[in-house]
Length: 491
Image (cartoon, helix red, strand yellow):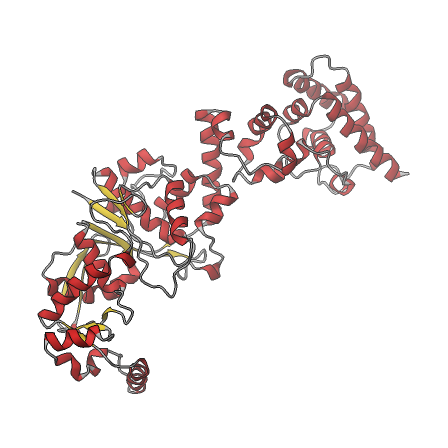
């Protein structure tokens, strides 16, 4: 059975690169009818952040990446928190001690620093095995005593050539110069990642390890441990970096990278985030850009993952989010999209009926990139906007006209609209078309004037739709207020 895992460390927010490393193993497992595991690698207690594990789970659920076993739900390989698996790691570590491939190292940290500085001055790579202490040759019994007394446990490397296959990067190999005596069990008794993930993946029967290319440099040490323990390693799937927008380095917080939760709170739809990240370094060989989860499960394949970095483009993510907003509205209706909008409306909107908010959503949805756009794009539907004459007089279509001319146009518009008996979209559209002929103005001129005068916003939907939603009294009142302001200002 195909079994994959996502094994994040709870050391802070979950970022873009983390999530892509969850999406791919999820797809690999699910399309093969396998199992997707969530394991929490929390042995780095110095960097542990309270609440980070809950945030990881919340993010996965939001994206629809529900796991089959693991943290929070249990399974046949409990526990799924590395900090609770200490005795399991010690059992495996003792096996290495018994065969002479691990030793207790009493070397103090300051001495290790001396070795590192000396090697740097000598212009040679620092390898701890070149400074291996005499204790490395103790018997298993003596090693166990020293380890139990609090000394860290190191792997005893036997330098040699290693070759392996990576499902993305191809056939790889390295020489003996990179093998080292890496730490297996730290002074606090907890394992390092280098050791723990090997044990966990074997015990949990993981078939594919999906992780970033930054781990490739450590692969020879991992292979040496697999070999020493006489266990078969899983398939390796190394993902190239998600790059900063400039494309010249790995994406980081310093480049303005936000957490996935920040994007969620901005109103990015989970379908859009999943879609974008799945395609960030992968494509199925076509021009398709919008994928549902079912399409990803059908079309995803490891051999289509690119072996070079993928540049993060927030503009494209926002574009895809807008596509998904329209897709949900068009395919599922206003009720389905409205259900996603809780918490994204202007505060003043909450005193209005749900039916009114849905009507507004139905005329603005096609301009939204994220749901939080509702706060700035719809506030004038709930509160009378403050008059800003500069928006009128500086508008590129209106600035050639005087304030008196603009006021006169508003008078003509107001009089015609006042004649409408049935204030509905069709009647309003007919009236606006008549006004174009009557005033001999271009749509960009007349409609810009009316749009700004009733919203004083950078965007509003089609005039007849806006007017229908605002209602006769409100719409005409705003037109007349803007006209009065223009007349008073021009006196």
